[in-house]
Length: 257
Image (cartoon, rainbow, N blue to C red; front, top):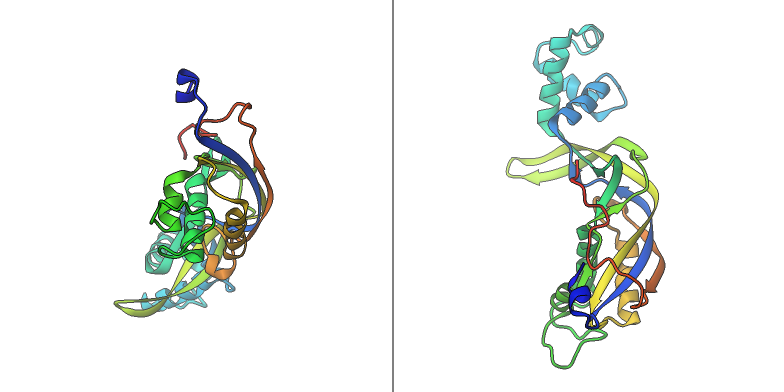
């Protein structure tokens, strides 16, 4: 039941459905401490791992021989080293799950569209479809009149394709430059569908093309500076007003884990 069902007037909202093929989607939800602890514990003896290098430094600080003692550490010593490695420079990001299925939040797609608006037509620069009566810039006008309906967008899998990939980040802060390790989950070759509703159908096709071309190259969600999140718009369709719509209802409504 919705307002249009009760009052029976023609809705001013027009619905579109689209599909994206995403090359690599990097998780952006922080992992809990226990998960990060398990990742570190599994990698501190892997000589190819950056965490192993950090563990070696910490063992030397503890007065241990990293060559002779690494294979003979007891459980308490391992946990102590893992805790110190984890606290030193480890972060982790993954995906939300709904009923065991990985999901992406619709708000992230809305954020990508808003970013495209700001980059393509900054401030109050004229934009395609701009009404003569408004003095607003595209981003301000767009954010009030375009909504991504989906609260959660299913990714079509229960596990990421790459789990706990190590990525080194160089950070400059009050304590000077330092390196940090980010453990990220990654999904590859994703095909997702989404629903967008537009007030008064004001967005012309030229503007939709501009926005999605920006998103295709600029990417979505985390680690876009590395080239992750790049995608292709594979379908776009205006939904017939005579067909039932979602009226903004969430596609998945159970509580996220």
